[in-house]
Length: 385
Ligand SMILES: *Cc1c(COP(=O)(O)O)cnc(C)c1O
Image 1 (cartoon, rainbow, N blue to C red):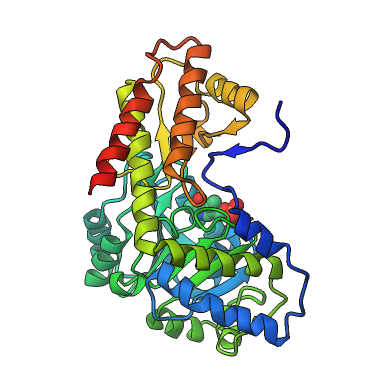
Image 2: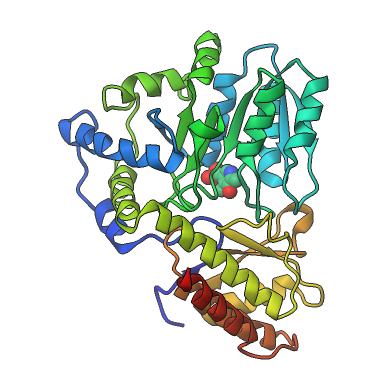
């Protein structure tokens, strides 16, 4: 097998652009020196753009989950009651973190594969005025669903004083996000998905309303205390040693996003979603979500008449192409194709071509090229408008 060849089409980690790899290979520098402050100054505006916020976006060293935990320990005060709107594994993660802190948490469960309904949450909150925070997931990676988090925030604020906390780890950087305009109070994302970096950094936007709650919170931990990150960021520094190599990379990622244009980046992701979905439709292989609920960064497919795991195995052995399986009860039931970050429409065509070969190899009867042609057509139409 060709060495060093990786086709990583899972919903994170994702491939790293060469310019970002080179940036990360820079010699180590002192984290209290002026080079680091300069780098942080350069990073701030790009992160604000990706978040759609006027607030400085905090950076914590740790994987995405540490960002979710930071959100919880900072905004939930002792005795508070919170609601988690769970659409899959990552929604449930919020619940699990709350339980680990013995927080009084209620889970509003949504059927896996569908998006949350803001009106239903609103009606629930009308009857439960004691809820102080509502947690939910922007892209539910386990099902490929994109949730209407802007509408959710609006609906929550209409009937309740609760803060709205959103996990945007698997889509931000690949989809337009307007944290301030939508009224999201705490928004978290990580480095290893559409941000095209290795795991190890997470980014957190915090609204003025959330800062008031956080400041009143007597118990916000030590490493994850967000006021420390805010106060240091104002001086272009961090409370603890940051993952400097990842910051070198992040500075380059933001340059690359700016050079392509954020709007273009978002259009590219939408196009890759549409190409992928068109291919499976043409092959008569069921998708796990409706078009309306489909994420621009990951597509979940639910085969009716072939073994998803055998199929994934052929992709891996023949091409070193990784697509993800299902999680929890969806294990063996679905597979998930990532198309985010350093991924172009031509990568989608390559993935689909390999997928068709793997389908034939496991004995599924398809017409070779049928899915690919459908994706090519979407590309041509997409390029027209
Ligand atoms: C990947 C992911 C996370 C973070 O997982 P880590 O392994 O801790 O980085 C959190 N939320 C969602 C929706 C994700 O896709």
